[in-house]
Image (cartoon, rainbow over all chains, first blue to last red; front, side):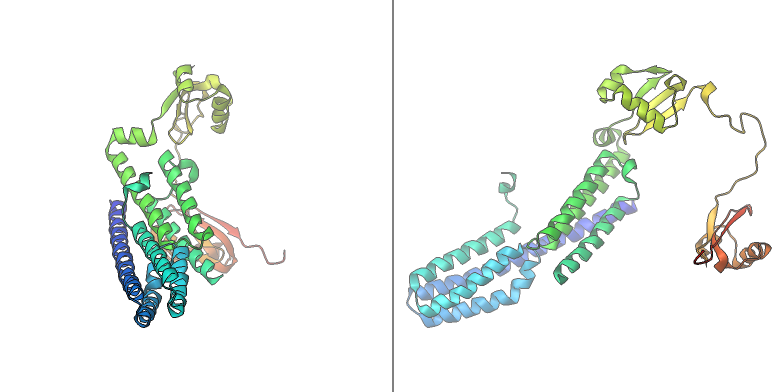
Length: 126
Length: 226
């Protein structure tokens, strides 16, 4: 019975950790995606000053939450996202709107992938 | 390098917790499900060690989920015969009243050579002396010999025997094992009396065992360099 109790406690800890991980990753990725979308809008409207500011914001935000996300997500994906965010900042400074938007989409796609890996999906049986 | 050391230490710690939670059993005594879980745990623990991109958390969660499932299934198997039969299988009688059940052997895919080998493992070299042999779920063979082939016991001979208690190590490598002394309801003074009889100090003793009836045995330490 003691073993069963230990298993129950362990299961509760795992469930809490998984929910917490899911919420944290979804939250961080969601906010990062919002900032990236803002940067995209600003770039489309030709406001490269604001786009650069948004890129800085995105870079800061990701830097701050990267470690927490790495706790649950493949480190390779996290590092790839970090390097893409860095390159995004350079593109905004160069004022290359087309490439900038393409890079933003890649970042959004990667954020969606990272966030999606934490969610339950019937795809896991495929 | 520090990352590898840290990850290895963390996983080692969690694997030990997981295995301890599953209970004490040696590989040979494991039920099929326990063996599968143990193999899976070692495989899963290796993944975050080999691939540094994998979060350690993934490995820990997977290990603990396996341990939880194993505990749940073992508890269910303990309560329910049907579940126990499905998870662990059931024992098969291979030799019944001295006759080999060939159908049972075919069912468990046991060859005659396997049977002879398993019997030899039980110190049985003549199959005609076996009354019953049961193939247990962990693959071991339990053997009941025919009356005439059994070892004669003191009870058979109607002999009086000395009471025998569980012999416990009270000194190991010169150090007194206090837990053993308290389990035997003995103390350091009594231990001293035993040692004085042999003119020894605890430091001179490699191993001393004692039972609750006062039967003791002492192995002296060898001098260094001898």
